[in-house]
Length: 300
Image 1 (spheres, rainbow, N blue to C red):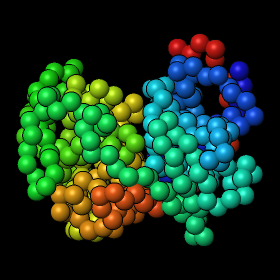
Image 2 (cartoon, rainbow, N blue to C red; image 1 turned 135 degrees about the vertical axis):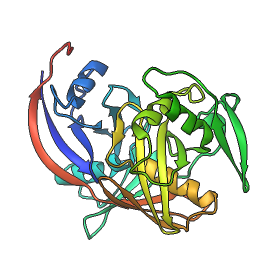
Image 3 (cartoon, rainbow, N blue to C red; image 1 turned 180 degrees about the horizontal axis):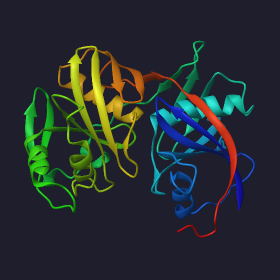
């Protein structure tokens, strides 16, 4: 099967974008993995699909698959690319659109400077909704908010010293439409993201796995961030991870309401007014190229 695609990125977090507004492609998990494969396919952190609005309350449906083929709830950087894509492809002339995701409705607005503002909705702290099994961790008091130390468990390839590092670190747990575990580190450049990240993201406390964030606080308006994403590994930028890190930092009394997040792929600006308010994210969205590819019926 030959399909058309567009390659895009949001601050280095890269995507294959598919148009299903005129009909479903019917791709399998293996075919999504093929598209995301950087050796045999196009290569991407996630595959984004544009579908028609399921009802009159929204403009489009927004579907996200990780590079491992699994469907996920949310992708913040992808949402910025989504609105850029539908406008460039002539699917809408609106500068602000509403899209339905697996578990939410997002408002995406293209600004006059070319950046995109995304209403990322209200963060979720209720542990069963994250979801997070508190019996697999030790609670640690932190101001008026609870932090956690994860219980020991074994995973192939995780060095013992790095597991010990994680057990000594306190994580903040929340959902931005997808689950996040944020820990504060002294220096993101030396943080053991490649080893501790897989250990955290697969921890049994998180039944749907988790995105593991490593946050270095520079000052009250600036952080540096690396994120090991479930189903994708470390990405150059993670939009929901940036939101989760800033929200955690604000709740812990360490950050102001507006923060610049410096990731390896670029800078995002995150604003949060506090409990009950939506998180707002501003950042770039870039089209790289368009193309077609033959997708095997049964990729290896």
